[in-house]
Image (tube, rainbow, N blue to C red; front, side, top):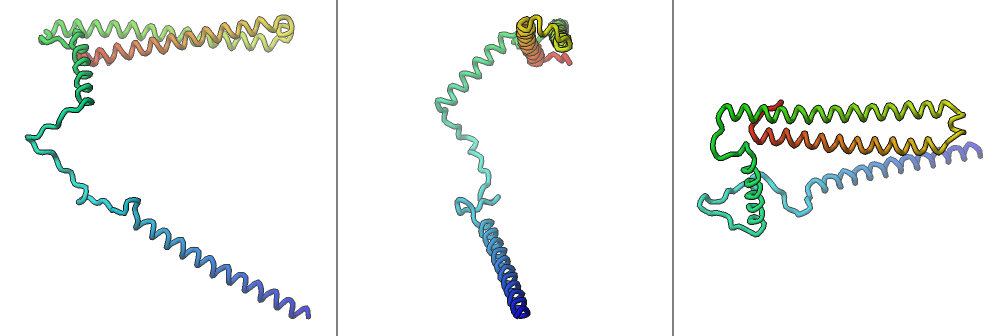
Length: 193
C-alpha cells in the first residue's frame, strides 16, 4: 500500500511538473507573439521613413506672411537692437585702435574691481561661517554656559544665520554684476579672459 501511494505521489508530481513546463512554454510563446506584434504596430498605424518625410524647402520667391507673433518678435528685436546701439561698443562709426584699447582697458578695470569685490565678499562669508562654528563648539563644550544663558546662544545663532544669508545674497548679486560686465565686454568685442 505504501508502495502504491508513493508511486501515485511521484506520478502526480511528474504530471504537475510536466503541466508547468508546458504552460511556461505557452506563456513564453505568447510573450514572443505579443512582442512581435508590438514591434510591427505603431500608434498611428503609419510607418515614417526617410522617403516619406523628405524636407521640401519653400520656393525662393515666396515670402511667408507675417503673423501677430512675428510682428511682436520683430518689435522686440528692434528694441534689443536699439539698446545695443546705445552702448558705446555698437557705435555706427568704426572705432580707432586707441578707442578700442581704451574701451578694453576700461572693461578690464571694471571687471577686476568687481572680481575683487566678489572675492572679498566670499572671504567675509568664510570668516562668518568659521566664527559661527567656533562659537558653537565653545558653547557646546561648556556645560555651564548652556545652563547660565541658553537664550543668548539662540539669539546669537539667529544673528549669525541672518548675517550669513545676507552675505550670500550680496555674493550672488556681485557675481551677477560681474557676469553682466563680462557679457557687455563680449558684446563690445573686448576679450577679457
